Amino acid sequence: MADILPTLLFAEHDDASLNPVTARALTAALALGAPVHVLVAGENAQAAAQAAARLDGVAEVLLADGPAFAHRLAEPVAALGVALAPAYGALIAPSTAVGKSVMPRIAALIDVMQVSDVIAVVAPDTFDRPIYAGNAIQRVRATDATRVLTIRTAAFAAAGEGNAAPLRTLDLAEPSAHSHFVGEDIAASARPELTAARIIVSGGRALGSAEKFHEIVEPLADALGAAVGASRAAVDAGYAPNDWQVGQTGKVVAPDLYVALGISGAIQHLAGMKDSKVIVAINKDEDAPIFQVADYGLVGDLFEIVPELKAEIAKAKA
Amino acid sequence: MKILVPVKRVVDYNVKIRVKADGSGVELANIKMSMNPFDEIAVEEALRLREAGTASEVIAVSIGPAKTDETIRTALAMGADRGIWVKTEEAGQGNTVEPLTVAKLLKAIVEAEGPSLVILGKQAIDDDSNQTGQMLAALLGWPQATFASKVVVGDGTLDVTREIDGGLQTLRLDLPAVLTTDLRLNEPRYASLPNIMKAKKKPIEQKNAAELGVDLAPRLEILSTTEPSGRTAGIKVASAAELVGHLKQAGVL
Ligand SMILES: Cc1cc2nc3c(=O)[nH]c(=O)nc-3n(C[C@H](O)[C@H](O)[C@H](O)COP(=O)(O)OP(=O)(O)OC[C@H]3O[C@@H](n4cnc5c(N)ncnc54)[C@H](O)[C@@H]3O)c2cc1C
Ligand SMILES: Nc1ncnc2c1ncn2[C@@H]1O[C@H](COP(=O)(O)O)[C@@H](O)[C@H]1O
Image (cartoon, rainbow over all chains, first blue to last red; front, side, top):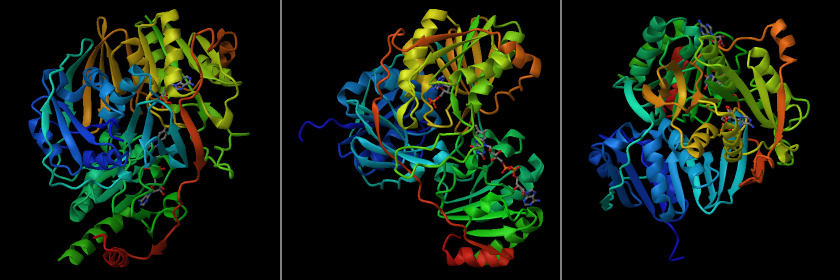
């Protein structure tokens, strides 16, 4: 079909760089079969736009740059999406905090029912998505003329790089009238990002304090070059920051290796990590449900085992 | 100000659901139902604002089939002042009404009731959609703050701290506004026995979709519901050294 409408992918970025989940969502976007344009909305986001132009398969990058799009607040970005929507057959974003906030706003304004957290593109209008914390997979056909999707990026491989797509600058900035940015508390970390990491070490309630979490979990992560995750219980208790939470209502990850330390394996936690390639669990309760999904289980006290494990890894890497 | 709190009746979070063998949905017969946990947090936040003298009235609203009033009653027992139940037919396939439709129904109720604030859960733990609050805010043309972990009321404004991917973000919203709750916003109270008794006398007004001018027809056609590909338990190892040996062999180190 010559007149097939292109797909618009909303890039996840921090102005300076493109978040790796964008390349994964691109794979899902390309599976729809239409040309893919990538929208980079931000302030001084030229660098992120150039990174988007390098992704293989991108037909065009649209850059909406200006103070109105600083911090990608939901109202201005959604207004931009609504303005662009008529030219597109599908609007797609990774299921990040920004994507989750912006896309339903657009969907409602163009009267479309969104499909959240797509894990497979079965056909251009048919998608698989998890429900009930991933304990069931629903296959849905979207009947609206435009599709609005958020993508569970852990389920898609990243598109490659080497492209040089053209970049078009948009002039559509409309500042948000009723919500204003006050501040942000974003911890800088040298560790890989949770949703992009090849290895993740997560700690649970068993750690008992923020100090112990820091002393036990983080050095093992560093020995492995891993990102750090946590259970809800560990986050609620203040052992770990909120953005480390893995699970149904936190981040969904699928690294090559996931190491669960003192995590029982509640359904809500499993929902966020059970698609990892290899799962290791260390828990003193041999009946802990985490062992039902673990490839390798070690029953015992994590406070003894983790330092040993760290030493063994150092030996193996030497 | 009035606060509207939409609460959804869902399968209790402790229940491990079963997929029906014929792929037609999830087994819902004789299963424990509860208020969506994020909505308990929403009710709690609204009650705290009323107790602080900021809010005058807390209205719980739910959309759903028979027995949905039990969930509204739970909100009333926690302390909400009154309820509104948009009664829908017994949904086929165990479907609930889609978020876009829920948002349209809620918009009609907002227009009738005139709240300054609507507090929803960030996500219903059955459909895991994470859409309704954002859609409602869009339809009303109101500002939104999703994933709230702290709310401070100002003069005609609201400062909301949000749990975002890299940490925390604070926004100032002009009222009226829509909020969605995250887990760290508060710890919801339990209803006391006297309050459960009192709740029985609180009014629940019943409405239907037609009188609110909203079509319930779904936009997503559910083709099948299946079991995810399972994972089988692996092996237990005896020591850290043995574990590292396996991980090397598996090629993940
Ligand atoms: C609406 C809702 C959403 C939720 N979302 C999430 C989510 O996204 N992510 C999430 O993780 N949870 C989530 N939960 C919470 C979930 O139900 C569990 O409560 C939580 O995952 C438990 O965390 P945990 O495994 O760290 O703690 P626990 O269940 O208390 O487990 C601690 C484990 O540590 C073991 N242990 C104790 N001491 C030691 C030791 N010295 N050495 C080794 N092992 C030890 C124990 O045997 C136990 O298995 C959610 C819950 C609700 C209601
Ligand atoms: N049927 C419903 N009745 C009342 N509130 C609902 C209903 N469905 C969703 N909500 C509200 O919208 C929130 C998000 O739901 P969802 O978008 O389905 O994940 C829930 O936490 C509720 O606050």
